[in-house]
Length: 167
Picture 1 (tube, rainbow, N blue to C red):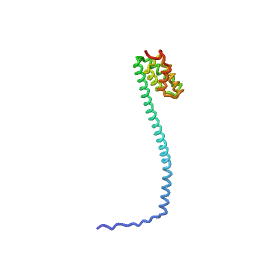
Picture 2: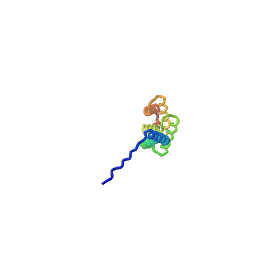
Picture 3: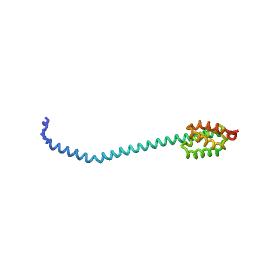
Picture 4: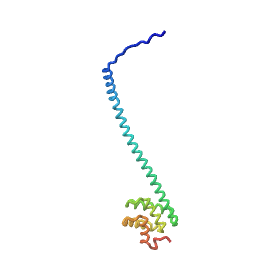
């Protein structure tokens, strides 16, 4: 036969347990406070890094879009020069230099100015009169508030002369 289980009566003093629990809680709060501060700093750093990465990604997207626009503008200029039989690498470089120079003096981007030159070439402006016609167009657009395209049409009409038009 098995021996009957042994019973040991235990009494707990609730006051001692409560005091011990309070001490443990206070110690945990003291010990974990630096961890909480560090976690807060990590959260702030994460937000800053996320914002910086977002800005960098947006900048990269804008740069890629600007490069694509520049490439497209130059492609249109080359096509316009070829369509008029005026294509040379030097003509393209002169057009880009003119666009850069005018961009420094106005709020018009060089890509837009290269597109304007392509439009003017397709309208028949000779290479030797292109810079003059571009400047006249930009000035007219600024004075009248017209778009560059509308100003180009007006400038062509106003500057019409034998030396302006391709043979």
